[in-house]
Length: 412
Image (cartoon, rainbow, N blue to C red; front, top):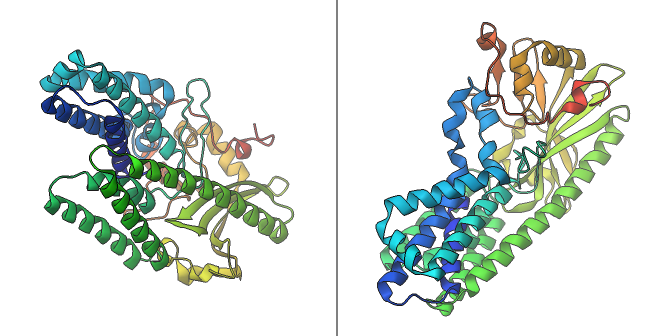
């Protein structure tokens, strides 16, 4: 997920835990505890993304692909991260250190906030199509949620509004709400969000604002409601993702009965469970090829035909509608022999395949086409010429190969 979502969730956790604990013996200690839990929740919810400092261990793009969402995004290595966070606060914040020495409630709240923050970071990152491998080194498989877009405004509203309502200065509240509304309008004008979604998000913001205002300085009603909304949204997206995958599989089976469907990388549109972008992987072992298709589908074509899904995520001019429910805008084939020979002979490509879920390979480069090209190109693209004189890299994480089903005839 984006770091704004991680941040508002971490802040909401810190505020909720503070309010559920008994108050400290005086106002100053209570203020220190609240600041401690807010900052700890924010840090714990973002700390795993510091793995970006490890990316120089490997040449581009391997450093980012194999070390981001890597070891710091595992349950085992969350433990030393939590201890490091505790040590930083203990050494650098004297008032917090004194409070933690004196208050059992503060120690309990700090431990709960940090643990919840780290776990929620992993859970939130597991929701999208990028994937994580949380059980490494015991299980190094990638897990893909394929249910929530990586930048999801609903989380900003659901968890951000109650937090903003706790800000004491009205001028700061107004500024934060204006920035939040401006972000929603920006995404809408860029054709990422439909106006109906914006209206629902604003209604949710108003409801949460009223709930938090009534809750006062110690109430937690709005935070509990936010958690219910978030969990309900994720559950709805999980069901919609499953249904979207079934729509895609049925269509591809009818389109090409000889192909074997291997995977469908599903990406929801933000705050829109009806529209889904997909990238499919199919293979024809007998013909020696595999096929990658990109497109968009609608789960309710009678209400929202696929042509009316927000256009910001795909090239509408290149779209070819198969029917009102599904449209394709690219179809590319790769040779299984080329893929397998490179995997066996090129150690750099072998390392790259520890990340690639939808690999498109030619003689010049390899690209994971889950990710759209930007003015700088697709960040996953590996140009073979850049590696031809390099020795095999060290510090390659032992992640499982997402496309092991393509790499050998047996799919093992």
